[in-house]
Length: 311
Image 1 (cartoon, rainbow, N blue to C red):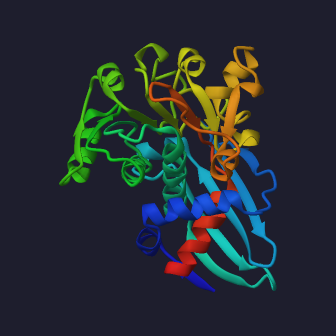
Image 2 (tube, helix red, strand yellow; image 1 turned 120 degrees about the vertical axis):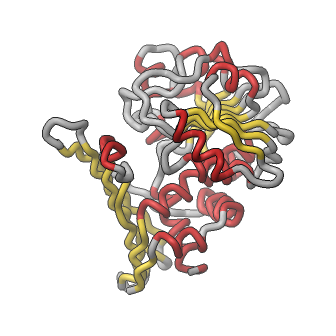
């Protein structure tokens, strides 16, 4: 069995090829049982979460990801998300590779958002607002830049210095990246807004969204969390990665559903619909679109297969 570390994953999973691999995965026949969530007490800190996410393609591969989420790890200078991915042979069950979980996760998550944006964001989108400065933020910026002609990126975070450092690291050539402390102003000027936070209160308000904006919601993975308000949900054409996950796990849609503001029928499509051509994405230039992602083991399996192929 091969052990593939974070550095090898980063080299193997370039953004554009991974976007295309995810597109093919959502068109394929991949079995994905319901993932298991377990709350883990931490004695005085925020509860941790243990996630177990299996998937398989008959005759090809079996994969399982085990992930822990410790929200208070940032205060200890540790990543909030840690874990590993085990890829096995689908014909014999023999373990093939043990892959660094966090690197695999941030790459596949960012590229799932980029895949959605390929259908939902304006073709001429040049301005991105990144809300959040965690491990996902740089990957979301670069993944979105791989599918749209981004020129200007603003980063907003609760810690402005952290946003400034991240911007300095990503600022390059054609992609101009800067930090901002004006969230409303940046949101009003953005063509694409990508959020990756653990916020319990809405950060993006519907009244800020300009015609043609695409809103990408990656954080707020629990029903008690929110990254946008109800007005944003009501103004947008709604899409999800998977209906089963996004409608129950992420508060941005679960809360409006529970309140009766929207119904499941208001979800225009998921990544299966978009990649298979069953549903149109952006229907007109000035339409506001929203994509809510909570992740799926389909993405992990596809990324693991590509990692082993390329590493």
